[in-house]
Image (cartoon, rainbow, N blue to C red; front, side):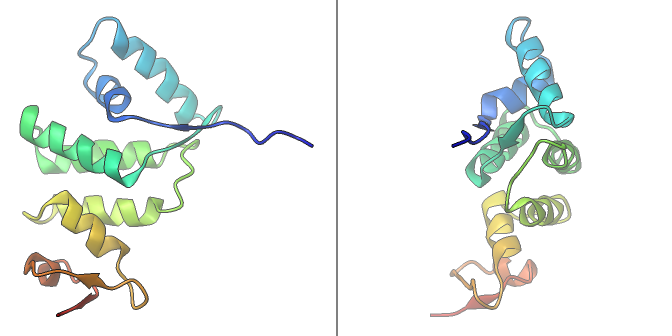
Length: 136
C-alpha cells in the first residue's frame, strides 16, 4: 500500500518569519520552506486558528494595516501547495476583515456560516458581516 504524501501544518511563526524577514537565521529557513509550498513541491495546510493568530500578531504587535495583512495572507492561501478545504472561506474572512473594523474570528465565523452552519452569537457585528445567524 502506498503511503500518503506528507502534509505540513504551518505554524504562525513560520508565516511571520516568511512575511516579515526579520530574523537572520529563521527567516531564510521559512522562506525556503514557503517557496516549496508556493510552487506546489510540498503540500501544506494553514489552520483557521493559525490564520487568526497571524492576524492578531501582525495587527497588534507589528501594527500592520488591515489591507496589508489581508493581502499578504490571501497571497499565501493561494500558494499552489496549500490544500485547505476551507480556503475560500478564509479568503472571504480576510476580505471581510480588510473592509470592516470587525475582529478576525468574527469574520471567519461569518465567512463559514451558511443555511446549514448557523452562527449563534450576541455580537451585533455578525449582522454587519451578513453572517447566517440565529438569535437565542
